[in-house]
Length: 91
Length: 159
Image 1 (tube, rainbow over the protein chains, first blue to last red):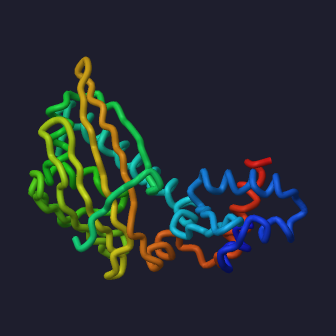
Image 2 (cartoon, rainbow over the protein chains, first blue to last red):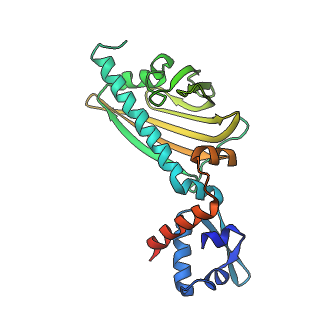
Image 3 (cartoon, each protein chain N blue to C red):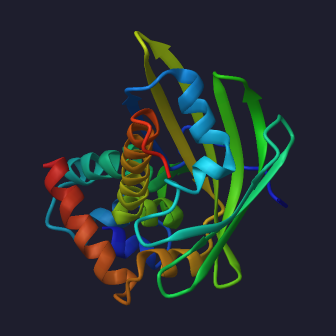
């Protein structure tokens, strides 16, 4: 579904057509994608048009986790450094 | 700084907190004094040859992190808000190979209880460049593959 959207904006009906799931199933899937901030939906006449949020996609993969690990490691080092300072062994 | 980062509910964000077994005054000093910061800021093997900060609301800061292979990653920013022993908000950019790869707004909140200090970090990212996305992810694989993997994952979550 995301791959389809990566080629351009599509309506919910367009998205459901090639998939072996019902329109309801498609809508449920889109709800998850929208809640994750990966797509946006807007009404256009009687259709709902879906678009991909490419920036959100990048973050949604591993990037944010990496950023979190960078901070966790940094805070680990800070804790050790504080220990060193408080034990009077600071260089 | 050419662009102001204005986080909203959809801005990619990380939040984490840490309790340090040290009084707030010391934690604040270690967090803000460049001589201390150099000891813990960069990853293992990295050095921080430059760290300058004019720690006041509106003040600027910049630092360089040097990787073990000698590559230098410069960063600069501006303090959006500084409240002594309470809060520091800094909006800054990170460069890789001469290009700004993203803007980060970092909020750190400090509080003390029973001689221990809690630091809460909230960092939001904006203006991520395509170069940055590639460099950061280091992923030669195409978008399609990534989409496919992620799509399957989300599909499993939805069903």
